[in-house]
Image 1 (cartoon, rainbow, N blue to C red):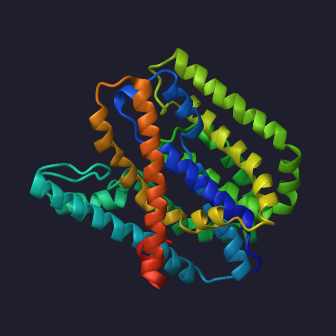
Image 2 (spheres, rainbow, N blue to C red):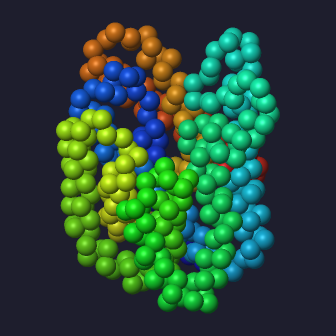
Image 3 (tube, rainbow, N blue to C red):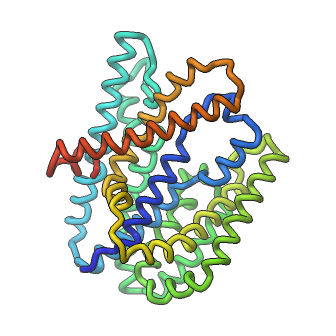
Length: 344
């Protein structure tokens, strides 16, 4: 089976965008006009990329390797849920220890407090509430649980299921990411990834011909979201029409990016290859390290917003690079166990 470097490099692109989207900024930088509007207009809802990649790789690998359903479940538990559990419990223990010794809440970790502590810990794990980005793991694990049914439907009722996927692509226009736990909002992108893997020979030439149109749509949506937030500053991201804009944006970013990464697939780009291989460990650890920028930014309290913005950007970039380096070193140190402990 040929290794798909185009999706591999796209995975690197996805995790870079997700990390940037989780950069930490102090309150007076977040509201610094027009920075926050512009920043969120580009990087909001980048988790969509991971859903597309997950759907693509699920269909691509299962159809090529013809693995059993039990083997598929075993790998997802070992390589995704187990690292999530280990890292969640480690951060929880670390945050609880620091809170008990110093009465200080560790940035980047949400610590259950009060009565029924252990019950709350289980709830936090099931909901992915230990750290901000952790919501994705329990969410996608439930999709993986039912995904073999999608595969069966593709084989036994291909035409009907393809029509169902096309219909599902319109669901995010009627549901925001906060409704029904977000499943109508994110699952269609997983199904789109499956459909792309199935019909790549048909879809890919089309998106190559429409690459300029995709780029223009992405640009228009960025400008539209920026103007809307600039004029209506009390809007929240939970409104359906706002979420729909970003859904369209990510869909066309994918259409724009895939032909580019397909061209790059003929070259071996070490940095992209390394980031892609470490993508899940970076996903698990990045928010914890980025959150620590708040400690340093605190020393600049009272400085002008523009200076704070510059300092915050520099610190976030530094922490992002540090996260990559730590993940790389952990992978080397843990050897063959790294995938089960840190996800890479």
